[in-house]
Length: 157
Length: 157
DNA sequence: CATTTTTCCCGTATCATGTTCCGCACTATA
DNA sequence: TATAGTGCGGAACATGATACGGGAAAAATG
Image 1 (spheres, chains in turn blue, brown, cyan, red):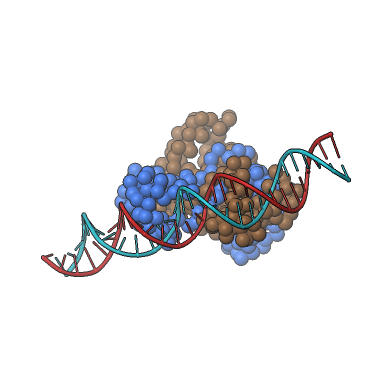
Image 2 (image 1 turned 45 degrees about the vertical axis):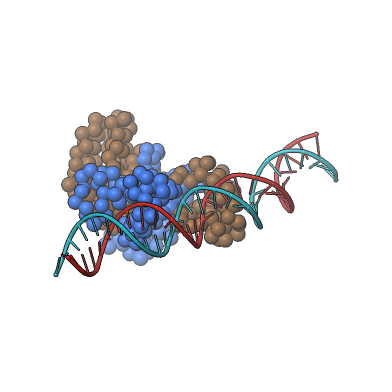
């Protein structure tokens, strides 16, 4: 995990369809070398997977919301975690702050969100929820590596 | 945008490295047909881009946090939006709720988060922030399309 | 209802790309 | 000075992406 790897990750994060030959040109390497690096990063788990970014509105899910959940006792029960079965749930984090759990959900509309909230409330141990409806998303992207190219040259890997 | 397209999107979201031939098998189509569908979905903007999922910890960014920002007046000023220059900021949403703006940030550690918060506070119009530190991420994925395969056969496109 | 147009699909052929293999240069270790 | 390990690149091969032509079905049109 060196500076080249970090640059490589940043390029792939922008566009994972780039050919190894072109990627090599940007990095000053040959295609096989880049291929080996990517292979290693995948096996190490640095690259978790390659996916597509889907436009939520285009598939009929224009309503993005963040739902904070307050529980009594230990909230991270199997029942609570099973909410991830719902395709509308994109993220589920256990957080420290004035709430216990944070959900990121993408719904067809307010009705679907209400249904989802009902399910949350029906979960044992849930005391309350607080929802934030996204009005506009100014940015949404994965982890960036540019910063590390400057600062973090201690090669933390 | 039909049921096949939605199934296609769901498969690609899981693994965008799949070959068109294999993708075609799963959908009951030939490789060229799938190719045309994907091409169209990309040109339509349904598929925004293909990228890699990077393990935040592996690149030295283990601290995930959600920062709610309360502003006075119209908070979405150019100064506020310029916070997206910072590679640590992964998402910036304008939200409805008891705060105005929601940031998703991934930092090297608490020190880096503090620096970022200082920058937020230095932004004109910012009244207060409330941060939620992720203790554990149980799930993190993009928009799903499975649900639509069952319910939403009205082909909303 | 007949005709035209559009849409969607497939098989084939070609070409670009991914992937493997092997030898070289460099480094570190003893 | 050996020796093993690592990363790189060129060439060769395997695989997959992409362009093209044509046919069937559906939709639009008269």
